[in-house]
Length: 244
Ligand code: DC
Image (tube, rainbow, N blue to C red; front, top):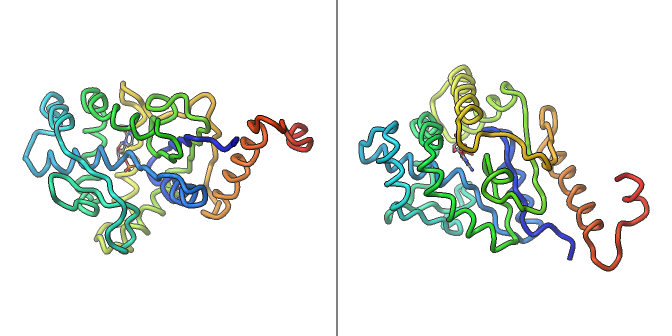
């Protein structure tokens, strides 16, 4: 089969990665794995334990020892997976504004990234996976068969995140969400280890003005072309060869 075994989806916060990845995983019957939950779970646990979030050694040690479990969803409340930490369902707790505010600091620690790397690779290398994050195509799975980088303007992403938070009943203003999204972008893109950037071989899609359906359709088209080009017996179909 010429379908990509591993699909890496990277991009900034609220660019539409998880919506796209969930739909792809469903359509292909692949595992959906959002690596952001690992950084979020570590951040949540560090806050719970009252650790200083800029203490890299302490947070890295926590990341290396924390039992984080990602399981199929146990409830129909909008979650795509359960996330459990040390016997507690933290699926929604790791989405709190407090975790949002600190997770980029935690994710910038090289020791934390090292501690979480093997888990991500192990899951990725099993194949039939759509893996979402910031550095999947560049660092975690540079050999991924297909890399998608989703981007969108800061304002568009802040609008989407604001709508999402409102739906969940969080009391924040649009301006707060805009400021936080900007701060996270800055942290994610400027950190020394595994900064947010597209892999050289990533397909970049800017999602401003596109609906989720349109983004999905574009990526589906890329997958079909990949399928034709990599089908061992048939080679590219003529019209695909013309377009390439
Ligand atoms: O995608 P998200 O908002 O759940 O990500 C939370 C934070 O984790 C975000 O600030 C960037 C970081 N992250 C990362 O550095 N590398 C990943 N592969 C996934 C997330």
